[in-house]
Amino acid sequence: MASHYVVRSVERAGPEIIAALGEAGVATVHEAAGRVGLLGPAIRPRQAGAVVAGSAITVSCHPGDNLMIHAAVEVCAPGDILVVTTTSPSTDGMFGELLATSLMARGVAGLISDAGVRDIAALREMGFPVWSRAVHAQGTVKASPGSVNVPVVAAGQLVGPGDIIVADDDGVVALPIALGAPVAEAAAKRTAAEADKRAQLASGTLGVDMYNLRPLLAELGVEYVDRLP
Image 1 (cartoon, one colour):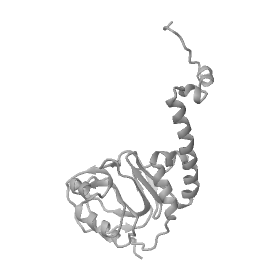
Image 2: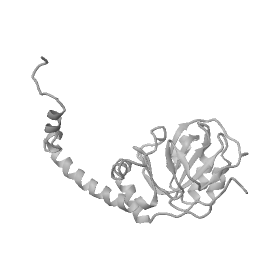
Image 3: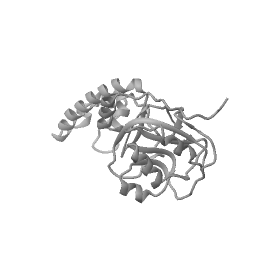
Image 4: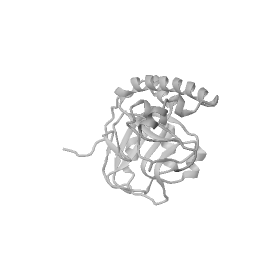
């Protein structure tokens, strides 16, 4: 039996849920989800201001080998986000301008790479957003088998095929489809509450009063003094 697969069929969240989470942004989605799903900070945005949200197409590659990224292109649909991982740590430039061109032709929204990317100036000029562990010109080969649309781990976070990915300047968050609707609702409530808090803070209200933190400070033994004893 084969131990490497390209899984063609992927369940995807509804476009309205994906759009709502994308509008909320990574930080709000992460908080609204109960602080779960956030990829580690090693995966960084490689452009400023890009915001994407879509369904994960996951790829497990051999380090220094981008064969399975090419295999994954065929199963991508418009709005998907490619999530590339390697079976051991790698910073090789697994992805560049030519693969981006192929993905853009299929309407893919962006790339999350727990390895390296190359041709970054061209990717920025093309308007194809990437989040990656490294920018590195080290080339790769096409020789080793891997899998597409299997569970992977990216920057310490488990990502399943079809998971909802949101990525922006704050990083990347991944949520199972089942969490999409409740988190979108919680994110909308959080955004509304933050608008009220923002107005209070802008009017001069202090955070220690708005959050009623003075009793907690006292309970923790924090004293206000004019000078140190």
